[in-house]
Amino acid sequence: MKNFLTILGGMGTLATESYVRLLDKKTETHKDQDHLDYIVVNHY
Image (cartoon, rainbow, N blue to C red; front, side, top):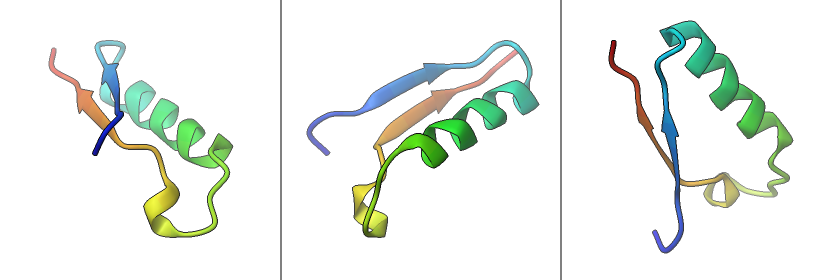
């Protein structure tokens, strides 16, 4: 994993989950390994 994105939550679990789903839908992929690598930090 060379490059990755960090997502800081805090607006609620469902808002963070919706944002992650949006990122997945907007990322053009041809195979499972093409998806973005990301770390989600969601604590409140």
